[in-house]
Length: 242
Image (cartoon, rainbow, N blue to C red; front, side):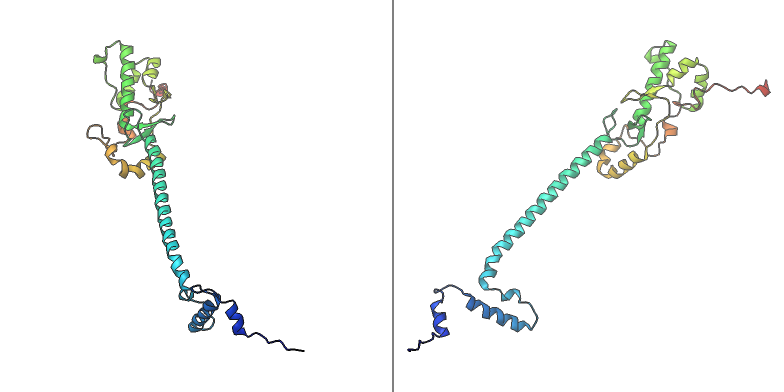
């Protein structure tokens, strides 16, 4: 029986050899093995162990990825800035006095919840007082008496008026909702804190040369004479002195 010749390994490699100019696994694997052996046992192949064509092909992708990251970062920064501007605008709008239409340098809040500049609110209440008292006394606007400047003056004036008239002239209305106001406005901590946080950003709008409110003003001084203590309480007569 005739023996068949066994083809050599060299012949098989020649049969499947790639065309000229292509890179085969036969050429790449020894290169990777040599790089790994040079780095030492147990060490992963370095970036340099990759085929040259893979490194070259990844450079455009890396550049495109870097540009994409920069574009996304800029878009995120612009979106964040826009949102901050919106929030800031809403907060500052709530810090605007509805009387003078300016940002409140020293906000005071009525019991109904509406806040105004201390000076604007004081002027509003004093104007109401003069109009009511002038109507009762039958005096024209140019002859109306000014509102009392101290609580002592207010108490003396109240005792000289009929009870119903005293109640009327010492009762005011909120400039925003027209709620009846019979108690002195107060500084609210949350409104005061927000004004303090934004003071640096809205400083040019806080104090004007004409209507600026000094920071030392208090409800005791600026609203003096408008809310006399116990204004509706009847006078108590000490019978032991009669």
